Amino acid sequence: MSNNSIDAKMMAKMFLTGAKNLEAKKEWINELNVFPVPDGDTGTNMTMTIMSAAKEVSNLGDNADMQAICKAISSGSLRGARGNSGVILSQLLRGFTKIVKEHDQLNVTILSEAFDKAVETAYKAVMKPKEGTILTVAKGTAEKAHELSVEGCDDVERFCEEVIKYADEVLAKTPDMLPVLKQAGVVDSGGQGLVQVLKGAFDGFLGKEINLTISEESVTPVSKNKENAVQEEDIKFGYCTEFIVLLSKPLNVKQEIDFKAFLESIGDSIVMVADDEICKVHVHSNDPGLAIQRALMYGQLSNMKIDNMRMEHREKLFHENNDGSWAEIKTEINGAAELTPTYLPGDDIPLGDKVEMAVEVQAEPEMPHKEVGFVTVCAGSGLAEIFRGLGVDYVIEGGQTMNPSTADILDAVEKVNADTVIVLPNNKNIILAANQAAIMSEDNDDNKKIVVVPSKTVPQGITALINYVPGASVEDSVAAMTESLSTVNTGEVTYAVRDTVIDDVQIKQGDYMGIGDAGILAVGGEIADVTFDMLSKMMSDELELISVYYGEDVEESEAENLRQKISDSFPGCDVELQYGGQPIYYYIVSAE
Figure 1 (cartoon, rainbow, N blue to C red):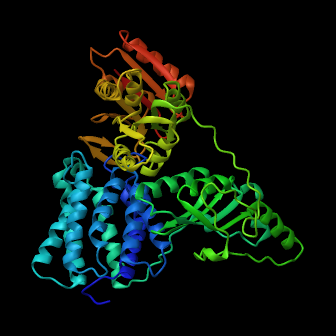
Figure 2 (cartoon, rainbow, N blue to C red):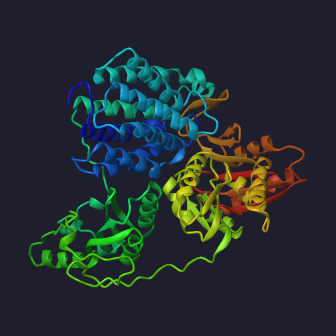
Figure 3 (cartoon, rainbow, N blue to C red):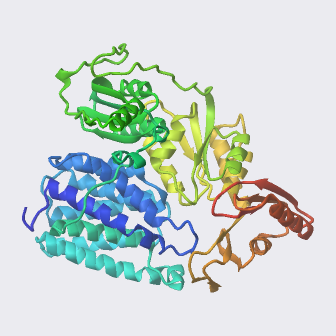
């Protein structure tokens, strides 16, 4: 490969080195978040997004062509997208690969077109694009790439150097575009994440030695040291299941996402790689039959192997304790369909040499069918119970401290037996992932429709559910739920992880902060005082109901004392106190 082009092998290497560089800088990028909250997660979200794609790319091997690499990057990042920054990154990668996949060799002209398509795709995914963000940095790289292409640059190394240099310049200007960045003394965290991906990719192009191993939780070897041996009770999922699906037709992106999400719902150690003809699957599960049944929806099965890992573990300990040897046997999935039985959808699956365990298939009881179902996101057992009491069918564990991915949302929707599923994200950083799930569900064969009510906080989600109108059309109900969001004022109390200045408010590490819909409302050294001061600034004469949800780190007696103080201070309002159990945030308070 010359300096004038990039082939498929180099493309894969550059993507993996870009992903690894982002992973290495993850915590640093997290610290660039404007608000000094303990859940600053831009770096984490972007890393988990790109690593979802990196694992798929690394599983392709060294001989994958450009089409296969681009498919892995696009589908993997779409499925793994978390948070606004992660969704935008996935859209940038999706747009980029739309151009790249059509070429075996990439030159400056093609790369320039790919940068343009990446930016176009990402901007379309964001309802109200804001300058001074990752989008601005991406647009700057595309503009520089176009300029170099028009000038006739044909040296890929020089092209990359100039594009990255300009991306750094644009990133440095983001504080001038967003005053909140300037006051906090940071550049945009999402933009920095994108720059680190580009820099890592360039390192790969230059041939720098980088460990490209993409970790899988499943591949940690069992220590042969008896004192450090894994205990049998530590094996959460007992059956190692491997097989190949001989696809009746190529899987589309939605089907790939659904299949992998299903596997993740029944086990761990997932490896799933698909091309147009076969899909290779590896999963650790307590019920291999569920994986087999699901796979039969997509085609015939071959190269099946099911091992009982608990029995193997006991046998290993027996041999070791008797000074015997232990040989680990690996079955390679190699596509040699003629060597093993092939099963058609609906066939009874016989037990043979390759299927060593009898499998009893116990499907989960199906939820009664309904016209409209609900999926919501929250963290905290108390909040989850509140949502279930309001009729929510499935609660995704997540929120501020862990944004669920697009695949998580699609998987949750799949579990709800309803014609239409209304999704309540309850966090502004999850809305884009929910919207992406809704768009991807349009290709779903079962015609299940996803509608997103863009709740930005848990209290907004609760109010939206209360305003749902049973019996009304979906459109009218969603309109009523969406309209109700504007009636809720929300405040959340947490602590600062670093010194900063926001909205001219001096904040010291360890201070408690009351954060309202528009920013910092109160700062101080006592949780209850900060919560009360925050609420006081949220109040107005027309508000009638105050709801206080206390977190896992707050004693009920402390919360009751605060409720009494609020009730005495605002006698015209009803004050409700409920256990939320949420982490990180001591109190979530709403006034409506």
